[in-house]
Image 1 (spheres, rainbow, N blue to C red):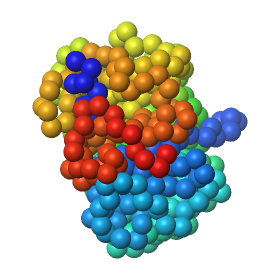
Image 2: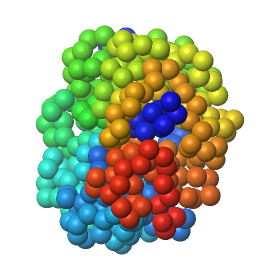
Image 3: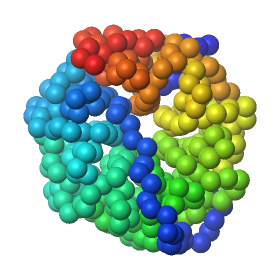
Image 4: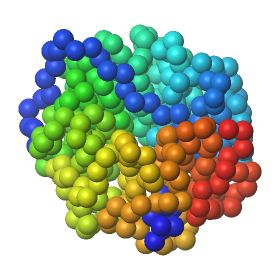
Length: 376
């Protein structure tokens, strides 16, 4: 059962109003490892970035379009503190200075450099003031700044939150969104937390991921209702959303075809539902048809939902402890068909599909257990 789980890979109807608060913007939680549809990137101990796997769109950032079965250095980047990728083929990094650099696919302007040409080298996002946090979706990108939330790229579902459905090649402010403590993106959907307490979502709602029971896309933020305590973090997949509250509880909503919202069934929910019996949650990771959590007390991660590995094994509709991941996981990321983690000491391990070398172990052999990635 553990292998099966391991390898799985807003009732509010009014527009979200600008939050006026005397509290400072809280720096968002940031990850040092990111998994895309067929590639992986991670921040090294000395602040550089290495990537591996698929590189057809230049998403490894090494100046080539050739895949790599082992980590290669992203050209020209240093002093990096966070990296982000989504279910598409682009990657972005945040530096200590607050600059955002992106590389890879750019057909809808998701690199933010006022162009639509893919780039195999990092390009600096145009016109963005000091960033505090970043998030990457399939074809759009967002950044948290001290002056608000800005997004760019694809916008056919309103995922940029600027009141339109027109793509933007440069950062565009999210309509009516004030001080922001977190942002998370999926394919055509975005969710953010204002004042570290209230969550809103916008964009695609085909699977109920806006949490408003409407199932219609919106192009400006909608407040999520029904969560009984303050929200401190948010994670978004292409079809479901999970948040962690200040009570260290997790709530999820959206598609549930594989049990990814953790309620013991495969019944979908378009309103937030508390995941029962999961406590002491430090962070949640929503991936393709599955979810994992890390705990405030340490210990083993818990995961639930479907399986995306080649074995086709069944997943679990209820949370399961995954001992194979270990007890010292600092960051965890779930890609489309693989997952990776970074230990507190910096070691990186990956598992799942490896058809494009996204596990980084020098092979294309799939693995149902985590394998070590050299160079970390």
